Amino acid sequence: MSSQDIPEENLPAEQEHAHVAVSVADEENPFADPGLPPHEHRIQDIDERAAKRSERVVALLFTVSMLATVGFIVSYVTIPHDKSIFVFPIGHISALNFALGLTLGTALFCIGAGAVHWARTLMSDVEVADERHPIAASPEVRAKVHADFKQGAKESAIGRRGLIRTTMFGALALVPLSGVMLLRDLGPLPGTSLRHTLWAKGKLLVNMNTNQPLRPEDVAVGSLTFAKPEGLEETDEEFQNEIAKAALMIIRLQPDNIKDKRELQWSHEGIVAFSKICTHVGCPISLYEQQTHHVLCPCHQSTFDLSDGARVIFGPAGHALPQLRIGVNDEGYLQALGDFEEPVGPAFWERG
Ligand code: FES
Image (cartoon, rainbow, N blue to C red; front, side):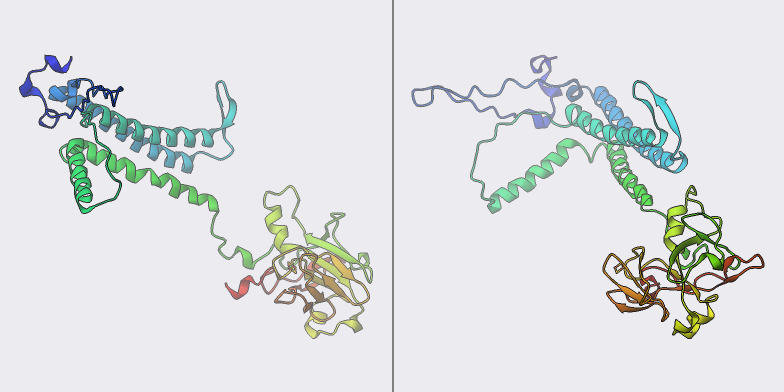
């Protein structure tokens, strides 16, 4: 239906005065502005039932967006990370990723599609020719912008179309929740897990190289042995998290060379067990100087004296290495007599 077929009284008031600028070709301006073509009215402009239909379509799209956002949240919470599905023609993919992508894509698409449909069918489509003018924002221009904005708000019919307004605000308010849910991927709060390790009374000290429980006779004077708690295997899901706290250095010293009284009490026949995790920023310590009983962290050269309670004698570390109290069980194996008495690793406990 063209605008010529529509009775004048049916046309919307704001569309009666579309401005058409036409200039006539002359010698100075041989390429005359042909002006705008006659305005074609849409069916929604003259038929309120068609306008209502469009309004319902827009509202439906915004509602689908809201449902898709809820579906995103439900998928994130309920679908296991390791579940996979077959999707033709991609093949086997993560069910969780597929559901998140599908629901978030649908939510965003429906908001966009709703806005486009709203603009194309219900907002004013009168074409306007606007003359160029200086960019300076004079008070008159600002007043005009303000008036245009109000006019635009009026023509978008957001005040009149309550259903669209409500569903659009609902969709826009829910979509950011998808981003909030992703914050869960930062991981669970550590709680008190950094204050404890797998060491406990009776846990055997297992050689990390041979995977065999250690006996005192396995630890020679001057050697450096790395140990882990009995029962912790490399195939365990939590192996890296646990070994990062529980790794031990085992050294045998001459008891006469141990200067620190508590260190001597917590040792067994000169065998001492210290945390392998540097108290600066947590690198694993691995360099042992047999003559001086010093261990050196390769990251920033913090040096600890193992004959004197592993106190710091050089470098940026702020604390001595925690010592594990050890003994021997009835079968002659080295065992822990409890957990570390202080958290291992960087100076976390000063903040805790
Ligand atoms: S981590 Fe050991 S000195 Fe920095």
